[in-house]
Image (cartoon, rainbow, N blue to C red; front, side):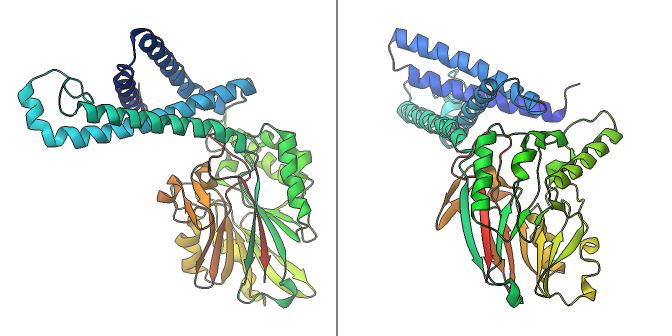
Length: 418
């Protein structure tokens, strides 16, 4: 039986394909016969292959890709489909703006014309052709951009932040913290490029390295080819980590509940193999010359429908019996900050998160940033402040889904406490 979600998705795909067809046909009508035939045939073939790509992307995404070339081809096709989506969105908007105000005229004309195509010779024809041309241009630019963005997936940017935190002990002034997040090792395909990112981290000589979740996409063994590379991360005060939503294996079917539990246990062992101290709803005290700060690590806790594995009460239990006044929290999902941290744990000075990847798409330049993900997550990239509390959302070291980055690059964050 076809699920409701699959039926809705199928209808959306049909609408996208139809509007793209209408736009292409409208523009190609202006060409002579031979060019029209060849280009239209090419478009039809590309559309069919793109539909296959929609199937292949999640199908192979659940397991190993048969080859890198197939992965690149499918991602190019996904880029084409997103371009088609933009074309369809523009054409649908044009239909709403053109047809509704002139519905009576259309009904009186009694001319058979499909939705999205004004009657031949109508006063809207030139406007419709212009809209079709603009839609195709925007769709083509988007497709080209997404294909180009595949080259940026290992183009790590180093972000330097200086933070003045209330109640920071004198001995911790000048502390250099490296934060990375969302490695998604199941998507990585270039150990050399990944290693250069690790070299860049170590070149900063951090005092402390913090990883804020999503080591893998789904399965613990995804990190095995990269254990040697990431085990090179070390710092005088240690490397600490937490789990993200992808680390629990919630997004694939397991042969049994026991297999899923074994996978999570193996993943935790891999954190230990890397030399990372995994914090699972617990805290540690970091000490310098008898002065201390608290580092709290919570399991995944999201306010957007993800399973809440995190337990803040458990994570901070016992801190009330210490003299520690400065606390740093590692929490994978930034929605946790407003939903719980700022309401109930106002003594946490700094929260470090990841999760959003900046959607791996958007505009991210000094003084201005935009991404579609901001309509889902209020805090989605960079530094945020409310009163004496700070949140930093790392844009992610790796990638998942779209095998690239357009506008929002992979990030290594260096935070210096002052």
